[in-house]
Image (cartoon, rainbow, N blue to C red; front, side):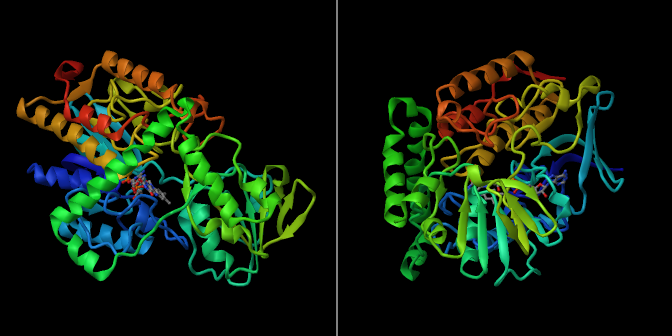
Length: 485
Ligand SMILES: Cc1cc2nc3c(=O)[nH]c(=O)nc-3n(C[C@H](O)[C@H](O)[C@H](O)COP(=O)(O)OP(=O)(O)OC[C@H]3O[C@@H](n4cnc5c(N)ncnc54)[C@H](O)[C@@H]3O)c2cc1C
């Protein structure tokens, strides 16, 4: 068994931020455990055609690690390069154990240490655990009737098989959310036929992407200019929460009107227009930014199947639709998303007194600041329940969480305590507040069913407010709400 002061699970931006913060605080006694044979998380794993970020790159990046972005919304290759740059700069590869799929973590109260078990039998001991296993890192494929019988090629968008040549092939993509919206325009021009199975349409807004000119890139190398751009993007995006939170007051119309115009401008066919027009309030599901999705739907080789023309069953040779059509297919792409709520931590977590996190979260996942849970001492969850954000950068929230996590660890160390734990009262009051605020949001009353909700029907994936409010909360460590041992 190897022993470290802190064990970080996951090597995406969450794990990297945790590691960098620990290094900056002089706490170098940590290890990163990563289940894959490479590091980097989301942008190293999601290599599907067209993969790109939906938040402007100067904001969707670590605040103290500016980069020479070539365009406003970086594509996967550039994000991968950026990730490599961060990992190399802080020498994180040397501190990482790859191929360690964490299978269980267990708190030992007698020694005040966590034992972290990897699937291959390796065990690590640590005083603190920072779980950064990612909100969207474990793909989900629904159990379609006959799924396993298909004899052609199939994969999830998260595991794109680049050895497979889709050119000229008959392809189906199941799902029409954010990843599908990037893949469809990219592959439509090369495949023979493309069948898109859409359960519910998404609202789509123009993307307004922009390639930086040489002189602009030169200007942005000045850290003050870069910061100015970053903060103007931040405050511009922050106003969007008004539409999500106060949509009942009619603010959603400010966004829904241009989204409707986007449909009219890009699609002439009234039947197709109707198929892509959602019947719920904008913002209830993730808004897609795309200038190329609707033109792709207009192509002769692309067929959009909506809910009333869905999948009856998957067969050996393709898909039978509920309209009785039998589609012969070479490839089925599952763009069916992730378990971002009930399954957000994919391994068993056993806390004080053998308490299981799965039992604590049986009704719905909950945590103080989306980060800490009573009876699970010294455990911090990055991008935990109700920390997701639809209107700005997830990295902003990750960095805010680091304020709180680093302060908690610092306090334990400075008073030579063994552990820190949130009080049940503080967690309960925080969770009640979050879900009472949530009632105001479009995610609760916008008339849609989205992956933001857990099986309980509660919205778990989103934070119901301004991201700066969350940031302020993480900066204010409330000593009285915590128990030190
Ligand atoms: C396709 C896609 C597009 C996205 N676009 C945006 C966007 O435009 N804007 C935005 O703000 N956010 C976006 N996100 C959300 C994205 O998840 C976050 O922005 C951010 O990358 C999360 O970083 P993370 O480190 O928490 O998680 P991840 O990047 O997912 O990293 C988690 C890491 O933990 C590892 N891991 C998981 N389980 C285990 C285990 N049991 N043992 C060991 N290692 C484990 C994984 O292999 C992975 O490397 C997107 C996500 C996806 C999937």
